[in-house]
Length: 111
Image (cartoon, rainbow, N blue to C red; front, side, top):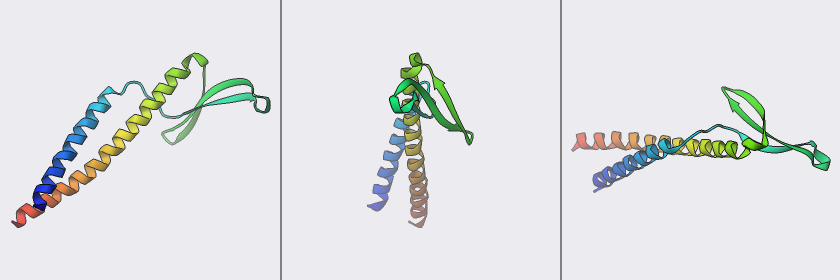
C-alpha cells in the first residue's frame, strides 16, 4: 500500500514540474531589483525620482529610471519574482522526486 502511495506522489510531482515548466515558458522580460521613489529634498518631498537597486554577479547596482519606464520596470521585476518562485518550487519538487525514486527503487529490489 505504501508503495502505491509513493508511486502516486511521484506522478503528482512529475505533473507539477511539467506545470512549472509551462509557466516558465510564459514569462517575458524580467530583471531583478526593487524600484523605489526618492526625493532630491526628502524632508520636503521635492524633486521625486525613481531608482532601481539590484545585485548581480555579487555586485550591487543602482540605476535611475525615467518616469516613462516605471510601469515596464515594475512588470519586469514582477516577472523576475515569479521566475524565482517557480524555480524554487521546481527545486523543492526535484529533491522530493529524487528521494522518492531512490526509496521506490530500494523497496522494489527488496521485494
